[in-house]
Length: 181
Ligand SMILES: *[C@@H]1O[C@H](CO)[C@@H](O)[C@H](O)[C@H]1NC(C)=O
Ligand SMILES: *[C@@H]1O[C@H](CO)[C@@H](O)[C@H](O)[C@H]1NC(C)=O
Ligand SMILES: *[C@@H]1O[C@H](CO)[C@@H](O)[C@H](O)[C@H]1NC(C)=O
Image (cartoon, rainbow, N blue to C red; front, side):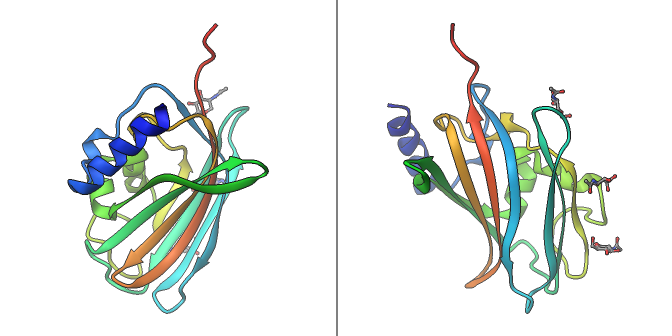
């Protein structure tokens, strides 16, 4: 039922252009378990790296640095595909959305404005040879899409610039809801 409502939500927003201001919810927690960079394209990036570390009993935080060789400007697009763990593997799941990175930043999706708190990144447009730094980053789950079912997920974040894939980051996370007693 939730999945059904969810796909309506996602399909609806996609068909109208994403309304990132609707990425607000208070029903589930999103807890990172680990993350890594699957690959990055050295023709367009100086480096991309991410270091997950346990910051307390429940949370894994991320440090990371992204540095582009190109002025991606406002054309940098991030596509996020969810895979849900079921029957021993992560399977393609019906949550996928993409938009310009600068729009995610403007709407503070997942609390991504925290990128402005460390390193050299002062905001959009995305310019070359500048460290975009994650420090002690824990996503703000109140700025996630509503209605995603509880479970274990892998999120693949693809950074795209026109027809080029600049990097792919994998993020393993759990979505949990408080137990109803
Ligand atoms: C772990 O740290 C996060 C972020 O600082 C905080 O929101 C959370 O409450 C902490 N959890 C515990 C169990 O201390
Ligand atoms: C950018 O990040 C890299 C890798 O973390 C680091 O070696 C370098 O010193 C940083 N540059 C600046 C200007 O902070
Ligand atoms: C994460 O980054 C912060 C800020 O740069 C730094 O103080 C901390 O030592 C880093 N932690 C790890 C585990 O690399």
